[in-house]
Image 1 (cartoon, protein in one colour):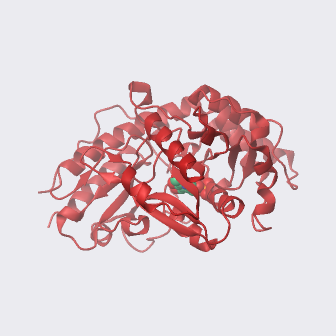
Image 2 (image 1 turned 120 degrees about the vertical axis):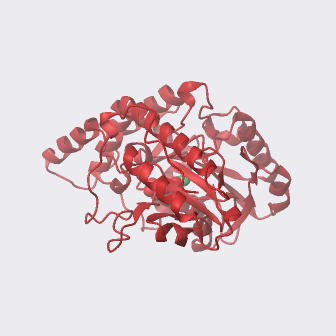
Length: 393
Ligand SMILES: Cc1ncc(COP(=O)(O)O)c(C=O)c1O
């Protein structure tokens, strides 16, 4: 059965009604299938233009005209502190923040800084692929602990966690909110993780890059609780990684931040990059600071569109025999279990039907696909129409 997807039940916000054509711009997402009618819905960036307040700040920095080696400008860390206090009620001091050109290299740095060679780094699966590959690249071991899947939620399997940890495990890499499932871990989960980390002498590194994209927090749904905001000893030596890149669509600008109450760790941060990690560029700083200071109105309007797209996707998946998904609470990703369709290669079936999702095998979950909902509504509706076609046979 090929289902009809309702075009939209909510008026389209003019800010997100259209998007620039990204083809031929070197876009990792859009320049993958240049010879075929395949709508890319894989890499996690948005198709929308960044907010005007951010573009203006970037233009002003360009007009300065000098782009030498740049430390965090004076407003960078205070802008992040104010944003974290306003959005998440989390008090952080500017000297507890350092910059880094990306959250992925931030994770890689923590492996080198906090886990000696051959020690273990524990993480939940499925997960964003660098969590799986970076430990090995750093000569450390990735210890995978599957989340438990039910019809309505992805939850922590505490027994599996206890069974997996080894005496040489040093780090816990938490993806919070969680990519790809869109799970928001609640306070009880986080305290459980802190207790577990304390029992086994682990440092928690919390990747909170998605924390400004909770889809229901304005409507009584779960709110983001920063791991390091807990009143727990393990929150005091935790490292939090954040960036404006997912929320305000700035991934190509390479600007992120690491937050840690232990200033000694931050002092060693750049050296731990081993000369391989560059300084953040001045335009990235200008964009990040403007996004954190002035971007909340745009963010709220974006979340409203993304919530609508999540609801469309969940309804579409429910109408396609063999597909299931747990409705994501955060992110612009929808994680779909295709194993019930009997289709051996779900990603290939999608590409044949004209959409290019992420293949679950890269997330340690073959048989799943991940859709990106971050595009104008009519295009997303067409993606869902093609999703139904992919599994129609
Ligand atoms: C959980 C998570 N962490 C990190 C990143 C990438 O961060 P960066 O581009 O700052 O390295 C992504 C991108 O999708 C992500 O989903």
